Length: 173
Image 1 (tube, rainbow, N blue to C red):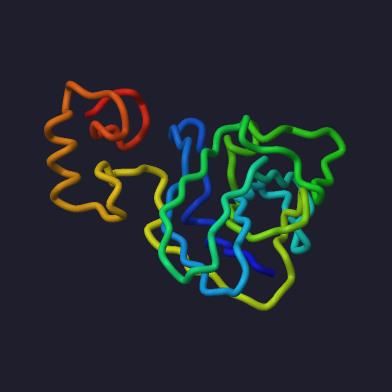
Image 2: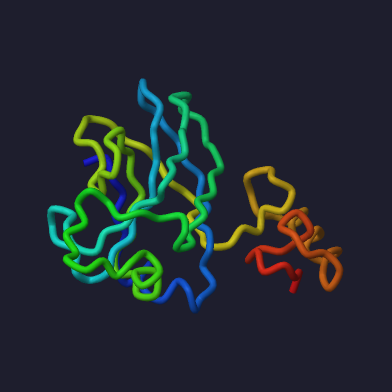
């Protein structure tokens, strides 16, 4: 599978109460084909073949086949997800409920609509700097002293990510 699975203990929990609304990362694609990346989440009913309460983003982000690092951000609110084709719930609990109790998170490439497991093919991709907040305020693909200055100058004044709002709360704090 063309999938990155994460240790459950690192990415589990209540994303809603923790105000997790985005997932940002750097991605590099060394393949000869572009990647179509999705994010998938499930609760603890997930099985080895990807069935259970499984939900995927209703959009993908394309990563070109250029072997360069690309900064991407996935919005991960309940309205960004749909039931996967592998979802076997008799009565769907919905993405909002799964985001209240995430057990499994995955980032995957898929060319098949609704697929939770990712394409089965030979290839790889690299991820770095995976975060639920974004402190790269000057958009130069790193968090450094220049970003600290943006945050410091926006403290108590600005209200957007370029002003220093890393958690997208509307307040620089």
